[in-house]
Amino acid sequence: MLARAPAILLAASLPIFSGCFQNGQSVLHPTGPGADRIADLWWIMLAAAAGVFLLVVAVLVRALTHRSHRSEPRTLTHEEASTRWVLAGGVALPAIVLIPLLILTLKTLAGLTPPESGTAPEVVITGYQWWWDVHYTAPADASGVRTANEIHIPVGRPVRVQLRSEDVIHSFWVPSLQGKLDLVPGQVNTTWLQADTPGVYRGECAEYCGLQHARMQFRVVALSPSDFEAWLADQRKPAPVPTDSVTTRGHAVFMTSGCSFCHTIQGTPARATAGPDLTHIASRRTLAAGTLPNTRGHLAGWIGNPQAIKPGSLMPRIPLRPEELHALLAYLGTLR
Ligand code: CUA
Image 1 (cartoon, rainbow, N blue to C red):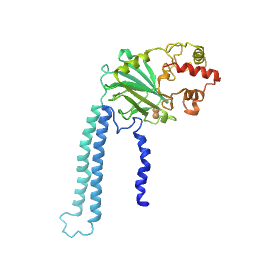
Image 2 (cartoon, rainbow, N blue to C red):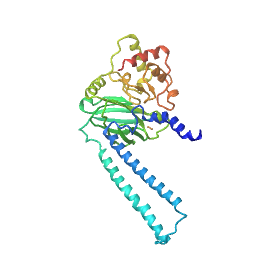
Image 3 (cartoon, protein in one colour):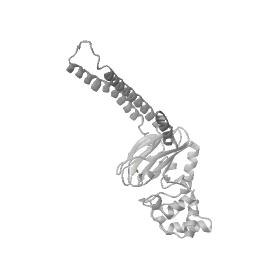
Image 4 (cartoon, rainbow, N blue to C red):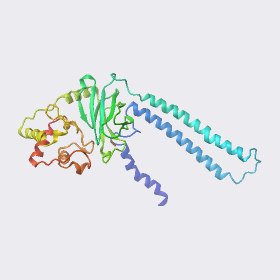
């Protein structure tokens, strides 16, 4: 039984580790040229580290097994032999291993340089505790499109990403597409995203930024160029005007109950920017930065008691009567 323990442990841990590879979120499953280069470097570093480890183990085994029966006369003094070991193991071997790895790392870094401004679609991403504002600034026909916690990109071409923060340091990381880069208050850092195939890739905040750091996720949605154009065209439209009594009531609830103090809905008087732009909230996959699937029930729960779902979040609880909540949900459901 005991002999089988390692196998059982390994089998038991597989479902845990398999979670690391699901949902398009793994550095070991790169799906864009940025992550490709990083993964290549990782495999080379792993091979080098494994080689050094095996070498050290071999030397150790030899030292343990050959110590006792040394009969041949010594040609070196003890000090000379020690110096030789220190030079070989402490200077020559690290230089042989680390210098090529340093050169490869610098080459990889150079290959990750963002595209020049004006040559690629451009998006400004601003980190807040604990969500992501996504604002398209180029090309001209995308300019002004604003969303939250979802970044749509066209496949097969790089998208320039400028990173800013409005409060503390966050870190932008889409493991399948690109390396990490911090969002630092008072500074703009630039990176880029490119996906080879259409799909949804998960991203995370990778720098501890307070109570809800773990619930500061986002999705990168890679679309074919024509689908991306269609998405942009949809996002450029202002919110539809309510057409029936329930959604008209919901619109009024939004404007008068406090929602409009923090959120923007394009095409309405709500222009506040403290919280995510909700002009197209119904078209998004998740709520509260990846915390909940975007369904009517979850939205009701989120509006009803945000602090129970994401304690510390700046979204306050707004007391609404059931009729008001029902109308508000109906109105928000039209914002596609
Ligand atoms: Cu933002 Cu962690």
